Image 1 (cartoon, rainbow, N blue to C red):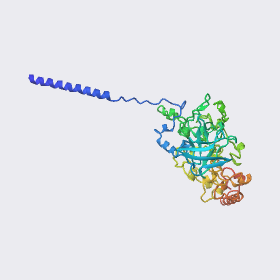
Image 2: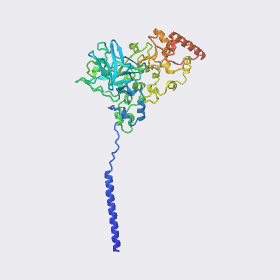
Image 3: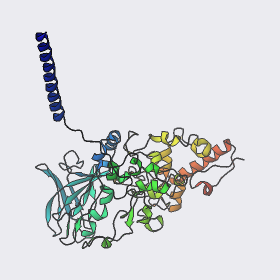
Image 4: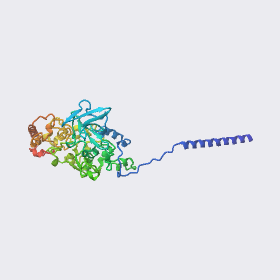
Length: 484
């Protein structure tokens, strides 16, 4: 019995030792395991005070939208110069002469240069720091030692593969490219770049200019994203702007219209920056914030009454690029509540750099499914007509004319521009029209074209049993025509 008790005691002691060892081992393992930090959620519940963070910060949650945006033209307005980004000919067709000044464009040791006249009147090689654009045209920008940015006086037109003048090349000839009145930061910056901080120091008369995206980034259309990234659960939609959720038609259009417009700011530069020699006003709607007020409260837009014929044809159609929003707000689409984002997308889902949701007539037919019932006297003229060719003629120009009477940017007034407008204006040099803007009819006499339109319209109207209508009744937007 004594031996048996001793064995039991030894067994119990052994078990105790094993348990103790196990406790020590487990405690050690637990101690070595890293302590997981509790999930910390954001605290922001509004957009107030949000800062710009750059489109890169959006990728984690919005990868698909970000990738689609990279396939549009918006990200590439301002880029650090590189061989991949330069579209102009710096090697062969690389000289341009204007008013006795010959400019030479060249590449050397990996850098790109434009040789032109300096403010001191001497030829100088200027190293390019940034390229601007590249689809219709490309311009080239340099940064002075004081941080000021200037666009050099020549641009490359892509469609015609040629160098053309952009700004004055002679210091004493006016509109000189390096005049302080042509500072990029004041004239172009806020539309070319997102989150622009001009960064001017009046004490040293220098600039420390920064931006978060060299183009129209996510925050150009959605507002500063700092609070959205740090939003409290359930407040994600309250800390960022979704243009589709803005309450008013004009506010939605202004998301695009803040840049797709032309004019000068109501704000005076001198009221905000003491920059010697700077322009009187900003070239963009300084002070405008997405979703707050309207662009027109901050911007004096060009107007057909005072800016024709340079910016508008006599018909009121745009003659210069970057005026889409101005014409849109005068259109029947705007009156009906149709906005830019009903036709366009900012994320590239439509698969084309024009950013239309569908190509060509397919987009128009979503709403105008039976155009022959709207105006059968006109819509049956062309067996295979194009909505955009007739209702969005290329009346304005960004870089080049595609035909003798057609630019490279489509009108956003959505008016059919009759040949009669050209006849009334005194000829094609004063007024283009939809028919002559088409390469097929560019050499036809406007009077002949109008005669054909009138004849065909009358034949179709009679066939449809419609009352006769004069040109004055149909010279504007197409409306419903009364039947007998």
